[in-house]
Length: 278
Image 1 (spheres, rainbow, N blue to C red):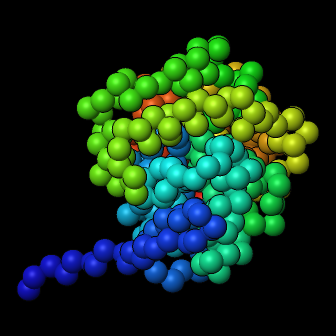
Image 2 (cartoon, rainbow, N blue to C red):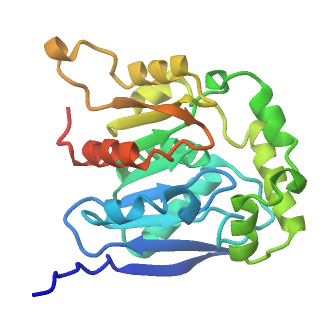
């Protein structure tokens, strides 16, 4: 008798027309009673580069919806600055197109800022939120060199990298001029497209929150702990109970490789999503 091999979860791909923007999405997995999980990648990444190794395990127990942001992956760029609010509106439009009223949101870096926007400004659409390698305020970043470095990026600096190769292979306008435009827009986000969120706004989030970062991340550990405290964490759980919001620090991990420890990320994220609550 031969071993039975389980079929891979079904994959649906498509675009949502949002004016001039053609927003690319993928849906992995079939029907499930679990809340759908939405994956939001970081700047200069795309669905495959950020979440590719994680999607099969996520989709084994739930419907997974992954998006390429404006100017990234298979989504075209338009004459619009990058912003958390703009990207959040795009995400909601895709969810509306798919008939999804409420979802779990997992965002990394830029995607984490969008996840925060959704959790704060559209709480009725978010059940749980995962914010990875993202500061809710500029003070949480390690010095001003981050903004300076991103603002100064040129296509020459990423020549021969997987990001350049993926962009040229997938983009609707696969040339270095448009890639430089993407880098320029990412640099400009430090000038206000992704504004600080106040402590009061972070406290007001209704969704249980998982905060993750690397121990050598752009985001400081002190900021992550403050983030956790604002979400009701950093308590003596043996006496006070374990809060619904949690913090995970991945060892030996930088910002760029924030989700590279897939075995750790997988277990932490699925455990958080499947947990009943506080």
